[in-house]
Image 1 (cartoon, helix red, strand yellow):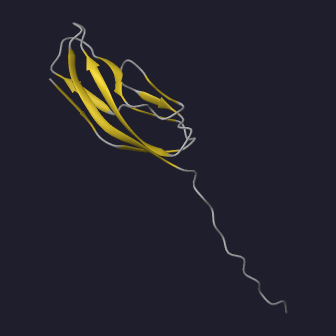
Image 2 (image 1 turned 90 degrees about the vertical axis):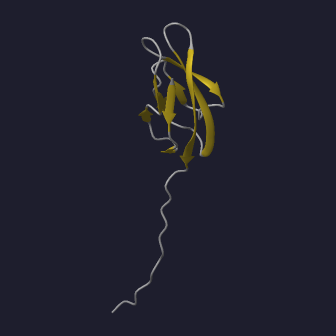
Image 3 (image 1 turned 30 degrees about the horizontal axis):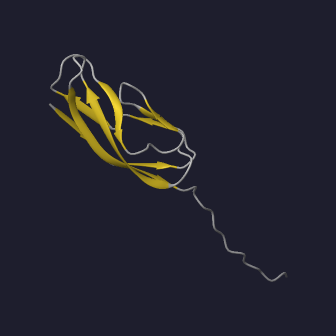
Amino acid sequence: MTASGSGLSLRQDKADSFKPAQASGGSGTYAWTLAQGPLPDGMTLAPDGTVSGSPARAAAFPVSLRATDTEGRTIATSVFTITVTGHPTLSYASVKFPLG
């Protein structure tokens, strides 16, 4: 029984949906729950393991998801970090040209 996952990088206030972990080796379908750590504010975890929403603030969120099979057995736990980056910034320089 195994689970796998990887780190994710998201942009603040941009809606996204992803399935960060996969499990194998149990019976039937799996129900995913948050085992440890908070998800980014504005994001939710569906029972099928999909994380979706629009993260509200930039930060790193170490989380752990647990997969349980239809017989109620914990199949595996997947640990990873969701990194939310801030809003993109625009910078510019003012240049003066002589007239004439």
